[in-house]
Image 1: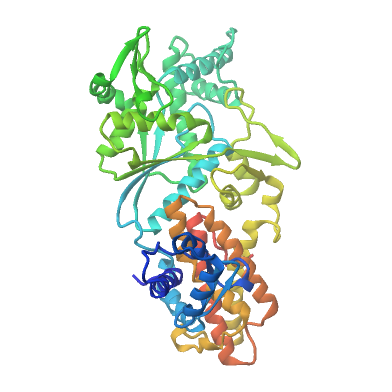
Image 2 (image 1 turned 180 degrees about the vertical axis):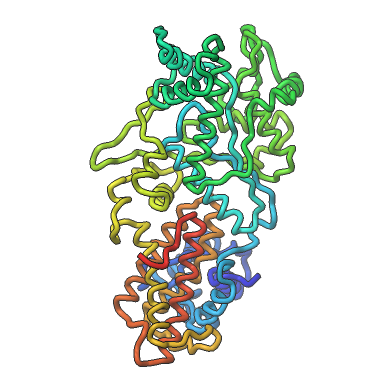
Length: 544
């Protein structure tokens, strides 16, 4: 597979460093896209790294490297305050367009992952209530990360872990049963720690419709199981409406049914000890802050045991890497899980746990608070109905996972360039419109390898080609760092460059050869925009 432009420049920079300073072992050089076109297409801070090694100033090193870099893929190189700024040659950029045209949907994909099997677990919200906007952030983050990893050569399976055992299911059942009995005219005290949202009453109504008075004498566990089935079905529908897909739903109860929990306790017995009537695991001897209870005083295993059994099951199924996406409120579970895996003989480096911040939902200037127990929350379904799937996905992806995110409902509904998703989708629609207009005017669209692409001499054209040339690198970095937000930010920058180009230059003019070259460029921008939107699970409209 051919190197990307960024990789070619990194290779060239490494070669020049070795030629310039052959006496020293040189670290791998990396370059980054330059946001300010005044300073080139890409830049490197390698001179700062080399400064300590060579005992020379970054400025002196950068000057020497820049002097030796020009030529081949690098049209020009300049040193500025210790940075090496580089411009990609016109010839290399022109070679890019036939590649994009040939690869189409596959442009940007790579084999970075080398076919490694990955189990991506995300959402896994307790099935005791509808999904809210915070769950939505984890859902779209996981879905798009799965797309990015797949596009980077990983074999990805997506899984939802269903917590269908324990006290929470019993509390759910008690809450629903209380509302059910109310419908039958029986009054009583609502469970102190019950779930009180309107959805509880809706479930009770459904049970009454299906069973009449036949469930009157059933216990809370019975109501809990029925309620869980209803809620999980609703959760699955919400995820489907949000275009979030899973390959499997793994039930916690299956770990008990298959004896996995009991087996795990047996396997950990040598590292466990009794204290205050409970069984503890000495996780503080490893990376955890304190020891953890495995079995309570009453003989019931804790959730921790099932969690460890579940993670062991992941690796026993043959996955090389397990990735968990958890809300930031689960930060205390990270080291206890990793410590437990070490006791079981697994390398904790095979488990990556990503913590994402929750979402603050804004309606105008007012922040909406959410609480599953009290039932005071805006559901993900509510947000999808109000702003649509595309806007919801894009807005939830715009910030890095560990940054707080404020979701502005009013902005998400605007049909203007103020709305980032509208701005990016309009990029694709505008490209489509230009290509349709060319056909209407009778301007023949010719393949990239037949067009005179060297006519694309404008600065804005150079920037546009350089930007689409970095698409594959952006995907690879997003996969490497688990940062899906890089893709919407990339698309917003691409849209800005394109809209600026469109306002300053006519694509269709009396110059037939120039028009045809520009149509090739427009088509390649359209391909990249669509590929990016596809990664995000967002539509690429032909008209707006």
